[in-house]
Length: 364
Image 1 (tube, rainbow, N blue to C red):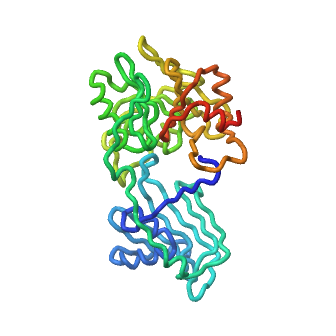
Image 2: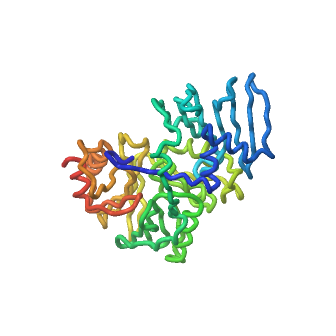
């Protein structure tokens, strides 16, 4: 979602389960994977073509070969915290010979039935000096380190995991509300445990979900498993009920898969208010946002704080954008439409900015 020249690298470590599967999805990786797992490999004929399958642990990888014995398609299922058992596919065509190495000039990678990467190649250099010089050092993700301690950002407002996307806890007299349920089961369970430790007499009564993207809703299954209602925009209900909460999780059963229970989903059209004598949290729809249909923000009037997802990103040290981001312009226009008095903006992806920075980014 970040506009401009922002590099977002992803490192695949072939020594991990998922890393090995991603390697095996490639044509040459598949052949090596089948050779390494020959004891479980099978060959069949489907539609006049050879189909080779092998099993490694709980994963089955299947490749379809052309009449020239070139790998046309590889598929497997992997676990995604948000969507469960998810189909991953690699589709390869237009093979050409480069110094004895056959390589597809057209690559289409698909996930969950949707294309996520499509490449048309013009040249291939097998074992080039540039390729063989690369040395990758795997880096531990957030799950590998100790969880960060919650950060108090205002009276009754806490950012639960500083340094990354996280829930923001809003404290009321007798209960608490979490804004956003990102991540996965582990992050949700840590967040709920920390909330109980901080406020043992104030149960988490609701979780407010800003929108349906995986990085902002990956933890909602664990909230459902804990019996906590999900407050989200009305356009999301069917998607959550029919897909995210109904999809099978057999590869890595999560808490909801192990102990199914009915979801409690409460929807917002334009506005909902949580309030008592100590705190008010307003939930508003960002109308006409290009980022996501049904994108919600939180607003705490007494602290003049907005809690937002993906409508603005701080870009310290980056070159100015050639033009203001439409989603940031839309955020400012909605704040003005709603007549909200804002001084600070809390980002679900981490950090806090003065509202002046948002105005500047919107070209004001």
